[in-house]
Length: 524
Image (cartoon, rainbow, N blue to C red; front, side):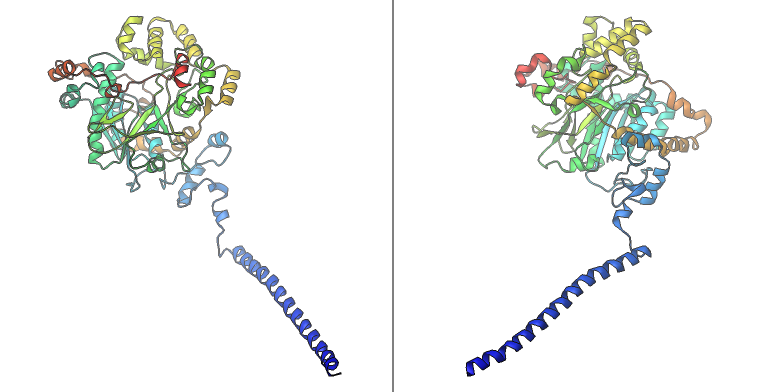
């Protein structure tokens, strides 16, 4: 009885505790439900009243392409002045922003690393040089060392270029030639096979001597990297999140001395191009960026009857880390007097070569070279087969015959072939340079720069705006590299007599054509 009573007495007490526990649990669940709802409502009220900002709103709408850290006021200003043509190209916002410049003025010293400089030898006019300079400023180039002749050395053009921060002009004067005549290059063998020859060979030697001097300037200005580019070439830093040459080079291992940018060649689609940087978007990819089967399998269709896959060179350009004993190795590579440089090649980044983009390029090459238009003579003047053929046509054909030849060999008019090679990955569309050029132009960068220089000079000392921009380009003028020394340096002759060079790496790297279809066995 006692056990039974105890059992009956415990049962009501257990039931009461269970009910109390359930009530407590219900209250907790209700609290957990109401708390987040209350917080969400409170946040909504604050945002509605404008007391907090939503990052998704901040980086949307008109500034959707701005990068964090950019001055959005400036970006909006640029945006308002950018035309719909850029929007049509990308199908996005009317402006594109880069994290290196707070505006398009480029009027402050950069403290970003690495510091990059470009050296070039040019006789072009402002219509080519200004977009070339400011494009490379946008992607992170710090300094420019320009060896100028011809139109680029004229008073009006020089004044404009010298007014740009960190642009140094070196004119081909008698003093410069005397200084370069003392170069150790004349007493060495690696460039000797190019000495005392006309046209392209002469230019190649001149570029190498200029590059040697640019290395000293790069050291004096604490540059980290140096590139040699022509003013018809643009670096394309593909593979970087911010389209940045700085970002690209900062990721290079410290043990690497030089990096190679394989070149892509412009593929023009009409014969009346006036501004290649703003009108050309189709390029032919380099062999190094294609599958071997794709390259050789479509070689014949890609060349379209021309001597080679590319019209001109195919071995790219390189950048070198500025360090002791650096020297040029021809216009396409760098070397070192004390060691064999460690060199790597970029898998995505490239140099865009705008070659023969204008019909007038045929006659401009002809006008700056005095060779006779015969097959034997042009071999002394030009290193590449297409340059030789173009020179002969420009020297012997009528205007109409030249135009027909240009359309057949340079202009891509076969749309079906374009589509096929696009699908194969041989042809590619690249719009970034076009968009950047358009943004710079419509922001008034070029016009304001020219206007600011004009206001500081009297009219009789300065060309008009139209004269500066539209005057036709002249070829390289001035004293030939063959005359830099009065006679061939004796030490150079002695060196060639003593040294029997068999290692090809000791020779300067010339502009080389891409692999030919006959070379297929070497690559497979």
